[in-house]
Length: 460
Image 1 (cartoon, rainbow, N blue to C red):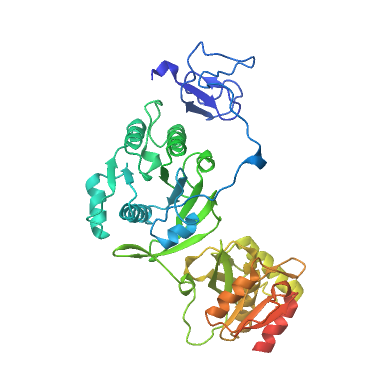
Image 2: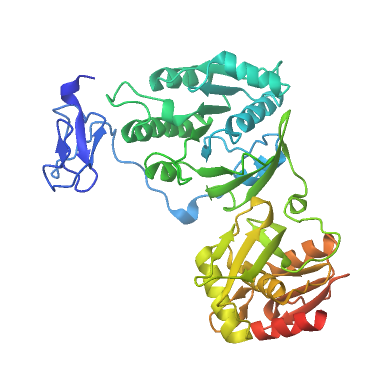
């Protein structure tokens, strides 16, 4: 495309400019001009609003929603159970998935394993690498024990060549590693720029919908951990996955942030081994420390990740503080910790104004649901009193500012999971108390924080 046809569009007001400017000539916004693909050819038919309809062949037929037959989405299992769980059962033909994570976390390893499993199941899998050479990918395959893999490999970063190859071979799944390296000749900006990422992702998405090929885009992340590039990228795709974990630990979490074909906030747990990533059948074992005897400041929480109940150990340490006591939480919201300390003081008489308070979710897991409130408060109280809770004790429940303990969603499933793993005592909101007793589990149902503290003192 000739440079004189390149247009730059203001993201604030929609104004255009034939060249890039630091300041929009229409609205005066700074750094708002973004390169755009060329408009339709001059002379195209226009309506009275000036819109061009050259690409349209006529008006589309309309359908009544009630007359459309709803069918289940067909899925193809990837062969990795934990990945299938996050995806909602497997890959969907024509679905577009965006997966992001820190460098070196294992994104390419996971996708290469999935592509090989699909290829062995009779599906054509194409791996497009833009960051590594074919030899480097082959070396990784050897390390993973996939030296005889029949996965199709293509080292290319030009969008037009990638689309031509996809159209010629029509694979069941195409993995683009990564979308930040792909560029289109229709734009003059460098690969990885906002315009290139948006345009390339849009073309690949359109191809996926038209051909039925499932496309997986690997995305870079920023320093803050968010996906790099325009936010519209997450709206374009059907599924957004985040690959999480500490590079110093062998465990990895794949979390679904968006999924049009399954549950969101579902997680898959993997362990990194010499032969690649392996699914963890019982993830609760990762997040529970093995204490010989109960220790003060430790409480087991039954949390819910997507549709999966998991047991996570919450640890708290309360120690003498200085003039400005510290409040630090790892894996939990820091602002919520300050709120819980205030509720604990006002409604349960447990003061910690002059104490340093540290709270940690064991195993590096991040807990965002409010059902962790009760476990956090019990852990703080236990550490402050220096008395451990009884062995086999679990708790969950949301705590309000008025001191009430509110129910958590799917409480029955949480309790059954705790009983299955051998826990014998549970402190839960009264609304989550089961109508029928659960074998091997003694349940204490409470309405308020002060009742919870009274029950704990009785158990000492």
